[in-house]
Image 1 (cartoon, rainbow, N blue to C red):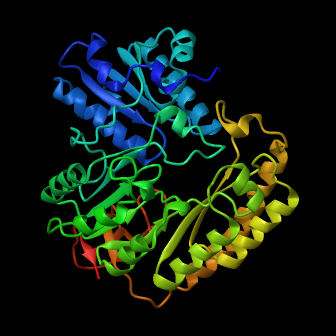
Image 2 (image 1 turned 90 degrees about the vertical axis):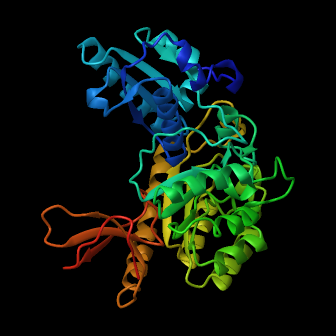
Length: 424
């Protein structure tokens, strides 16, 4: 596929121009991360405002698939889903199929040419700094994702997100607080702040890192919100002020999702991570020291162009030494339009897979040790649901577990609980 600019495709605001008759049953298939989920909620909110009924995909006349194209596997999943929906349309079970999201934004013309049965190909929702978007929330009623910024402030060599999403953009503090206040009134007890780089929040409009300032205002908001969780923190943008806020504010979970991606100085430099090996190690030591009960979640990419056996061994040793609570490992995906795409030293797929498996094997042992360390400890837990026919078994999460991506906690109790209750 030929790489396309972010400016060449209409956004989901243009759905109203697609001649969709009002009063239709509309369902969405959401693919990708929590950021995409927020986009899907906004798509549905816009459609509902325009007079459509929001239903499960099985009952839909119109199916909207919100696609992802971050890595090769995400593109393949998106294409497979489009094919499945078009087959349902062919069988008469769906009247229209609309493709939205990152894959559509990036490869819109190619999708329209390849799948002529599609009724519309639109991009991603326009991101507003000032307004609170209408949304149909797809999360359980007691937690929600709040997107505070769009795209990424950095320009990593391997990542296509800035090409897909455009320039980094933050919402104004007043806009975020308005949404948080609305969610608090609805009874939401957990807010998950998301963005490709939330630690750069405010740089475009306030000309300074402003996440700490936003958090100080958020903790004053409402009476129902008990947890505020930070997702996708870029390590080079983590400030001392932010660390202090996390350490000192009771509502903010002692949990940071901070993708490090690698530790070799050569790889960090070639991929424009704007942080060195020494600075990374200093940051981790600082977080461990100032948030001693904290939990670090991170991700690494193996097989980046130029990654040698020595680079990978350095990464392996780094993981062994730092014993992260949560680790995800991705195989490098060669993406058109990125700096890394044309770099020399591309690593064979077989080697990438071997390195991923080896790193995950090491982390499995670390994770088992960390899990054992919780035996005998008393933790706060958010109740997510009651397990059916379990005789008083509930499923919840600790503050160290983000929804959908981390672990769960099983709680047995003869006392009845409702979802959203925070047990202490």
